[in-house]
Amino acid sequence: MATQDDDSNGKAADRIKDSAQQIWLAGLGAFAKMQQEGSKAFEALVKDGAGMQKKTQQAAEETLAQAQQRMAGFASEFGTKAAGQWGKLENIFEERVARAMEKLGAPSAADMAALQARVEALEAQLKKSQGAAAPRKTAARKTAAAPAAKKTLRRSKAS
Image (tube, rainbow, N blue to C red):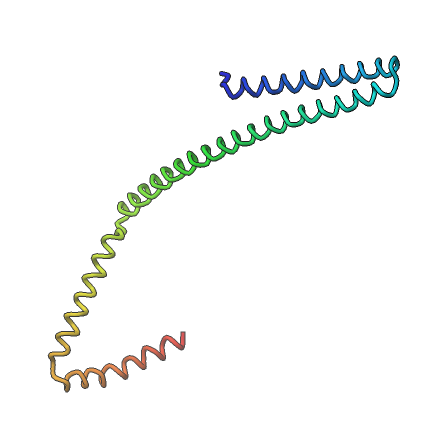
């Protein structure tokens, strides 16, 4: 299925081929005239040939620039589409992993956040209730807990 861009590329290529053919013919004509008219005619043809070469080169550069712009557009469009597809694939993967974790009984991120909030609330209540308790009981707990903590520390260093 040919597009308008393909048609214009084909026409530009045909123009370049025609220009090259004309240059060749001008060269042959120059050679024939040179034999007939001498060096003045030859110099005039060289000048004309240089002008024709500039025009042809300009046309080729313009066609190349247009093709590069179109290819950059295609590449950008392809990149955008690929990124969209990658995002969809990533979402599907995340959903499947979440379902598998749920089937295994693993807590979700929401479950963990709720548990963390509950632990923090319980810690706050515990601190509040310990603050209301008598200072003597707190001191007694600290002295009783100190030897047990030292034993635990010694065991962990030994292993």
